[in-house]
Image (cartoon, rainbow, N blue to C red; front, side, top):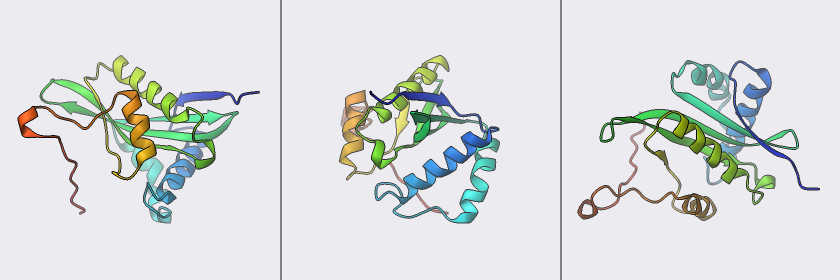
Length: 162
């Protein structure tokens, strides 16, 4: 019998959702395509409060047969060129033992449904260049490197640690 997959919007006031968010985000951080190591205890201690206090937080949890196996940590933003909101998928992760079962695609579908409901003009995300599996999932779902004006070239993601 096939496992039962369910996707829910997390409630940051529910202890079981908080625990799933912490466990799944930390598991993603430990993955070589995440951060390559666990999150510091101080970060884990602050994470739920920080997410709860951030006004644009939107999190989806994926459960297989009642066990949390995937997460999409998202944040609403705004497109000045479209004068509409956008939704950024900051983290999308599926536990290694649950990959290949459509969990990531279902998380993306849930995120897209919510973005459409919110009147968003687009979904955005970043992905590591060598994360070929995730890049294929995103491409199959319709994501591509952003190009706004062909002659300007494709958009690049930059970061400056503070």
